[in-house]
Length: 385
Image (tube, rainbow, N blue to C red; front, side, top):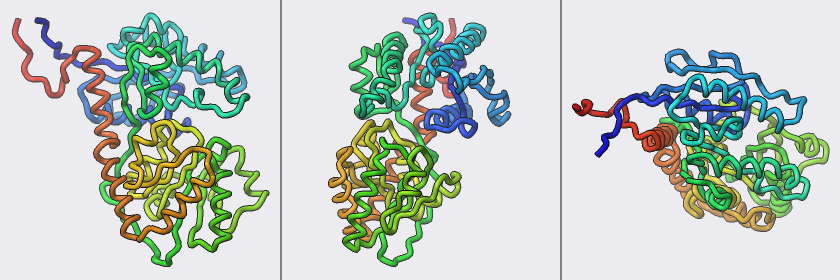
């Protein structure tokens, strides 16, 4: 019987950007995953990205390779192919044991890497478009996801409904590895005790986020004199529209805020509301949970894996303004202790299932299984001949 090899793995993470130089859930995931893998130890890590080398703290011992960035003035799909050729050249030179492709970073020469390739398509938004225009624009990306998933050794799903989508595309093997969040050691939640329920929205001001539904519900509540206020954080194509069109009473637009301000808002608002029409596994929900903030979110993508309906928040049918109104009304009717229990349940789940150390450990477990390599940090003495 062959014995499991005991040596260090070399893993390459390929990404189209790193937070904060590039914004977005995948770019934040790329940075945090790399940092937590490096802190854990046991693997040699290379990150291939489109920024100047030196994005990580030197003490982490992460090897970096830079590729030319995507030219936003050119056809995006063609730029994806062009940059993936640079990534492929580096992979051929380095010959890592395993390759994690964030999105479409590994496209050129992907068949030559297939036995080592882990494909992570993240939120699969191109399969959840609502309008004919969105569906038409997403067609080439749907083809590309299907193509890469059917050739990669493993395709990663964030969970929930996304797993079924990937399996329907003919993915060879699907592994469920969720998004993750930094869970602070201590969160102090202070409430003014004035009876007002303070709802928070965080997201891009775009149609798919359901801001129109939130405005309808906020207006109904204001007309009824309900003790509720709303603060909306974010930017996007619809922000100027709402700034000029007028807002329902007790609705405030905060625009973009930095992370420190955002985390403070999670910690002292009563509930995060995300009436999104489609989603993957939204980071904002995880961030709110980690700070003890209950969540009302649409049942889309992998949100049902995050929010336990009635325990840590409410899951709502997407695109339903009446259901959103009833969910907000139901939350307003809770006693303070019931809201607090919801927040604590969400925080406990974030810590036990979705913390970065936990998820990074799951990635290492996947790497070890695929490569047949025992953990170099925990392996005992090597067996003799």
